Length: 503
Image 1 (cartoon, one colour):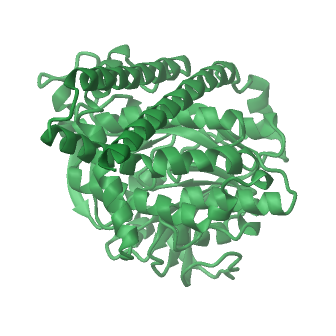
Image 2 (cartoon, rainbow, N blue to C red; image 1 turned 30 degrees about the vertical axis):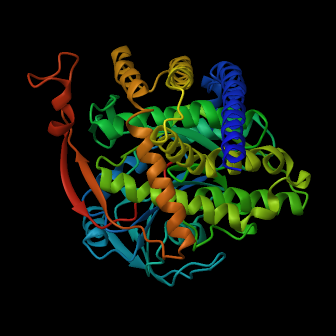
C-alpha cells in the first residue's frame, strides 16, 4: 500500500510540474506577442492637445487611503498633485490615523473643514468631516476624515463616495506615480471600447532616488528582499498579467495602481470592507455583476510602469504581508467559488480561476509536501540522487530562463531602469531566488493558509517606512559605492500603518 501511495504521489508531482511548465511557456509566448504589439501604442501629440482642450475629457479621481502616514504624507500628496493631466482630483482618506497625519495635511496644504452632504453610495465606516484647501494651488485636493474601518477596502469605499469623476485610480500613499500615469490609462480608454478597468505595471522604489515627489534615478536595490521583489513584480506584471490580458481574463487589478470605472464599481457594490485581497475581490465582483447583468466587461493590462511602491525590506514585514496575501487569496476564492469553471463568466471563470486554484493556491502545499516527502525518502535511503539532481537542475534552469525572458520583455517595453547594468541585480536575484527567496514565500503562504483554517482574525499590522531623500546620485555614484546607496538615500522610521496591497 505504501509503495502505491509513493508511486501515485511521485507521478502526480511530475504531471503537475509538467503542466505548470507548459502554462509558463504559453504565457511567455502570449506576453511577448502582446507587449511587442502594445509597445507601439503611444499617445500622439494631437491626442494630448485634444485632451487638454476638450470639454469632454474624462475626469479621473486619485483615491488613496492613509493610516498613520505622517512620515511621508506631505511628499506623497505632492506627488499625486503633479499629474500631467487637465482634469483630475486627489482624494486622501484619513482612515482614523492616530498620529499627526491629518494635522500635517491641514498645516501643509492649508486645509479647512467645509460643509459636505456625504452620500454613502457604498458602505464604509462612519464619515466624520471633509477638508478642502484655501490655497488655489491645491484646489484639486480633498481630504476625507473617517472612522477607521480596519481594511484598505473600507477606506477606498469612502473615497469613492466623494469622487466626482467617472474614472478613479486606486493607489497607496507610499506609491509614487509618474506624471503621465493617468494619460497612459486614458489612452487605453480612448483606443478600446467597453473598458471596465486597467492594470499597469508596478515596481519597487527601494534603492531609487526621489526628488520633489518623482523618481529621479530608477535603480534596483542591492538590499536582498527588495531585489527579489523587483524581479517578482516584473514577472507578475510583464509575464502573467500581460498573458491573461490577451484573453480578457485578468485575475486582479493591483491595489497599488488600479484604474477603474467609478460607476461600474458602485453598481457592483464597491469594495468588500472585510476583504484582505480587495484588489482581486473587486475584480471578481465586477466580473459577476457585468456578466449577470449582460453589461460589457473588459480589463486590460498595459506594459508601462505607472507606480513605484515601497516593498518590505525586512523578513518580519515581508512575512506579515505575504501571510496576509495568502489568507486573502483563500478568503477571496472561497467567497467567489461559484464562479470557478462556469462558462457564464467567460475565460476568467473557465481558465484563470481554475489556474489560480491549481497553480497558485495549491502550489505551496504541493511544494511543501514534496519537500517533506523527499526528506522521508532520503531518510529511508530510497532516493535516486542522480535522477533527483537532474530533475532539480532542469527545473532550476527553466525557472532561470523564464526570468531572463521577463527581463527581455521589460527591456522591450522601455525598461524599468535607466541603466542597463541594473539588470545585473535582477540576474543575481534570478540565480538565488529558487533556493533563497522562494522557500520563504512558500513558508509564508503555508502560514497564511493555516491562519485562515484556524479562523484567526486578520490584521494589517505594522509597516516600516523608509523616507526617501533627494540625493543627487550620478553615474559616478559616491565613494561608498552603489551598495551604500539605499542607506544614504533613506531614513528608516517605524510607524503603525496599513501595508499596501501591491501585487
